[in-house]
Image 1 (tube, rainbow, N blue to C red):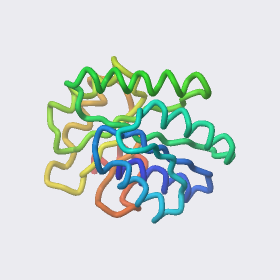
Image 2 (cartoon, rainbow, N blue to C red; image 1 turned 90 degrees about the horizontal axis):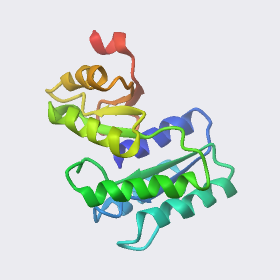
Image 3 (cartoon, helix red, strand yellow; image 1 turned 90 degrees about the vertical axis):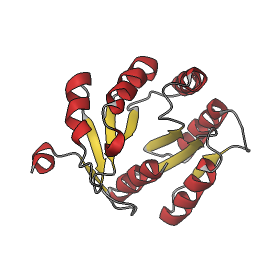
Amino acid sequence: TTSTAKIANFLKGNNYQITLAAADTFRAAATEQLQTWGNRIDIPVVAGKANSDPAAVAFEAVSVAKDANSNYLIVDTAGRLHTKQGLMDELGKVIRVIEKQSKISEILLVIDATTGQNGITQAKTFIEAVGVTGFVITKLDGSAKGGVAIAIEKETGLPIKFIGNGESINDLAPFNADQYIN
């Protein structure tokens, strides 16, 4: 959820109009967390009622984003629980609902740099289930230094799009391989 806000803030800083959708209804505090970030960075957040259907939130958000002439709709969904089949099925439903109204250009999977080899398993599972197109590697400011990042790219053939290196809203950058290696 924090990475969603960071990406939205990055795009807004590049003069794009953004709408956020709080479709992580699996985690109790996720909607409130995204709404707080949205207020801080002045980006509208579409949210449903507590325990609402994530696909319904996404469906409404597409309409809101279109009406607002947003360049990007960023949909925050539950993740990281690749062993929960019901959750994976729900993510597939969210994608199908969005695709009925609009083309999806990116499906990014956020992986903590501290995840280790389990990150590769997560990545492969999400690629198969929902067609991930790239990765955001977070917590590169920690002691792990993101060693799993290169392994994930090598194993999946998909690019790292962004890296997170802190807790601040501006602690996100496009991935640069040379800087990462240095």
